[in-house]
Image 1 (cartoon, rainbow over the protein chains, first blue to last red):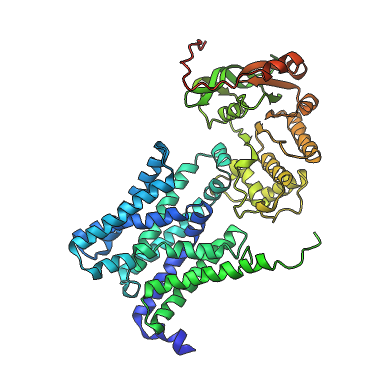
Image 2 (cartoon, chains in turn yellow, green):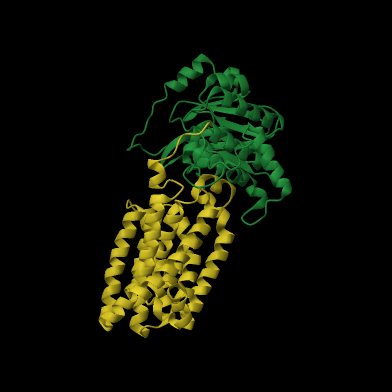
Length: 288
Length: 250
């Protein structure tokens, strides 16, 4: 038991670092994912994750696999695409989902091209799928900072963020906080995606946001419980995925996301709030 | 109209979408403390009028002026369909948002506030529903919940957009009692309504509108057979090639 569950982390420093990294990512990504889901922006998160790629790639072009260059590039690209997609949908007939799809395809192709201009396929894989088993001190600090900022910002934005989802007209009638809140929230999404990008790569970063959030939806009927659930599911998926990759010699990033995916499928089947099992056998109806 | 100062004043107001007017050259006032029904056929511009007062829609022309005590807020109940009922939120949490003007983004909800929330829920007959998710409420219960939120907003001006559509007689009667109570508390209430009987029974004043004001004043005078016929004959005139309106904005 000890040897298989604790041993890898006690023995290998890279496993400890990976665990700290995925825990930090789960802490910030889970609640952000819950809000993305409740605001019906799940695919927006996916599109923005791809949009980060060309920015990070340009950083890579200038400075190689450098943390600050790729972080700044990714943040800039994420913000530009979020704003551009918002503007296109506001001023043209194209809906936001269509304009995001256009932008993210463009970004993905551009990003892969830029990385290939200079780097090898190994570097490309690094950018696309991350290096959760090779997190250095600075990357860990970045991940911890991002999750700290995220949790504190969500605490401040909580009320307008919830109200903007439930009853935007009411929010507009009592406050002007709506638009700044939305922008700050998009900023948090980009920030968490950039953090996740360093550990899991652009293609999988969004997985630690959406999968735990979607799984938590099946266990909680209250938004607070849902956010806590998403964090717990994210952290357990991180732990389970790392162990899985260690014992079965699987690539670590995909193993973490696969575990989160497994948690989602399990919740879909057995979740107390609308899981398939409860839909099929709801039990006898109550008195009142 | 009467001696009371105006709470809302319209000067040649035109409201609309694109450049097409939905409310055309409206002038007049809602006196402070008045209880007014806004009546008219579908497409007459009733909801548009409320949006103009709240400020979510800017007039294409003219001015809407609100004269409210400095601190007072405006409470607005839009048509219920615009609320996301799938959001995992409890009745208590939704009602407590009526305290926004006091608590803002960050302010806490203290013991006194909690008592007020409970009182508001009791006033609409929803004691015991605190923890229910809003997605499980019936149409009438949802409307009661929203009225509890209005109670907490403690606003000097209350705007209701078809608050009793698809609501049964019992619930309507209960909620109308709250409207009457607001009137006795000298709040200004403007409600868009369809049920002419309710208007005749409860609302002293009426604005009959069919894109332009057909009649505005005491309910008995406004709701004459002649005026109602006139409003019904309103043409639903959306002309994509309409030319610019040159009526003078006095």
